Length: 299
Image (cartoon, rainbow, N blue to C red; front, side, top):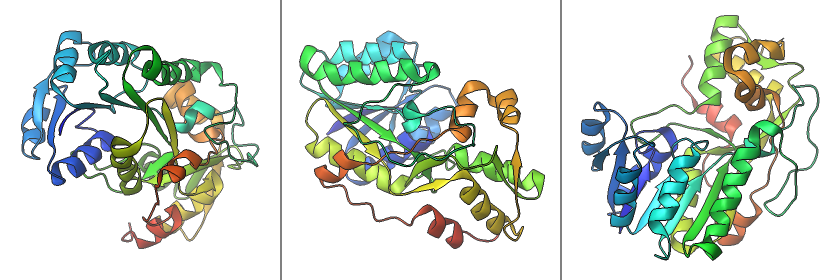
């Protein structure tokens, strides 16, 4: 099968690409810099040079493929519109990657969500995440309106070693680095806010299962557990040899560094349950976040 992947040099896209290459698929990846070209090709991925703003490059690669996996920049509406237009009336698969921060709130670490949201539950996104919610809706509706087998995959906090060029995920490594500087596991506010999480290997398995079985218009959360940020801070503290010592920083700290996206990434609740994925037959097998931390070499 010929598969075109945006984000093939990234953490999620690169991990998916590695699994697809190992399974014998013909994988093409978007190389957004000259340096990425040889790195992708060394991993058996045919590189297509271009950026998410190069509509002609994206469209040509999408039309040449049997399936497209969009795993680069969930906020780049232009790239998504280009890919959907290129695949219109083809019946081909388009998987769009978003993130469970679409359900984020403004808890700022002060409270924990009590009930996880499933894919069928209604919610009102905070203004910063409204564009992502609208994009997800557009992808799902494309199954009816554009004749594409369009699917949305929405992971929680992803952890574990990436299988492609980029080994590190986003949230956990940044928290580890900040905790190392502070000499204690760091959370924000009271750290009571709760995030669902998923191991990268389990997430990759969901992509392959969706390729095989998901009907057009499907939406899948991806999670296999959840933790409050003060609990994550304790895991990091133990990993770094700080004896479980933790410290809460004002939420303004992360807002200054990373803006509203950072605030939602570590100060909010993003508590979801992957009901649809499990109905599809997804069965996570990788270690939980706590078990994964315990298995890491001492830092």
